[in-house]
Length: 407
Image (cartoon, rainbow, N blue to C red; front, side, top):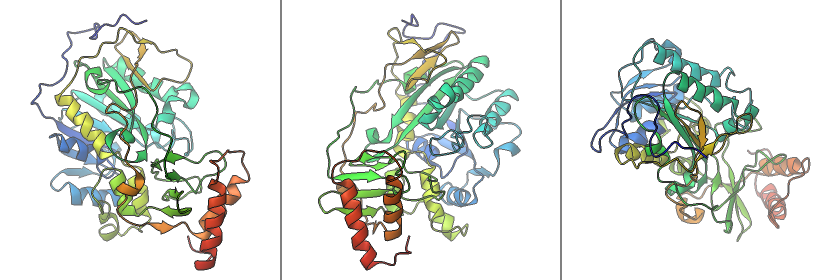
């Protein structure tokens, strides 16, 4: 057991967090389409600089954050502008289960080092906030989170991380992401680890089931009354929408991009400037939405800065190194400790897909259905009773009505 007590004890005297009415200036690196900054803005915090290299995402940021300075490449930032909070949802391609799994030192995910380069060149902000995929806790026995937390500890930062599931914030998307918060003189646990949230899994009964038609061999991304994690890419190499099996009608559809934006907490057509201003193809909007941070999650974190709750870590236990890391943990310079908190700080809010989706979507095409069925025969996955029959029936129906070459 840990004897850490309700507050960190190592180093200088620790403040809990900012005062209840104190708002922060934010610099957002790897900003994407601004999900973190939009959510923080809803809590009253203000973005002063955004950095994003994708030209489609840049077009979105220019339209949605007018007047905020925009930089195109994190490697071109010499000295970090003065700010209270630095956010960095660095690229996940090398860390995701669906990606290259090259690890933290991969060409894309290795850009995390640019954050520490800037921190080492001058006085850092009060807070650091990282975001990435939960597979980073398992890949190479959690090497990515080990590298990050060690780098923070070496620089005198106290840190805490937690997986947060979008379903806890009123959106029917099964999206789990790691949020890592750090500070030199404040307690990140009071922001991120409180409240602990309920223990227990979400409901497993429903009439709508989300899955990825681009998968089928090793996994499905199965979600009950929700869509699986919206992704910037897929196992077949293109950013694609998930599919939904409507059990009552045996219909299989893909959601509209506007509903995908809403499933991430954005207003509909948030990513439209990527097409109208940057000239990107419509499919690029799926990549931007899939790579985004869910807005209400960021908004919750923003509010937690203003309404912290002291965290008692005396019942937490040391992290066992050399193994996958837990879903939540914290460190204070003496080691890393497993936090006994859930992924649903607000509880699990059940929002049926039929009630949430605003647009009808499209039938999954014959070609997509056939490709999925072919992949399922190559693997050994078990499926919910009636599911494969439903996909086969759907394929037969749309094959008669649509061109077999339609996507």
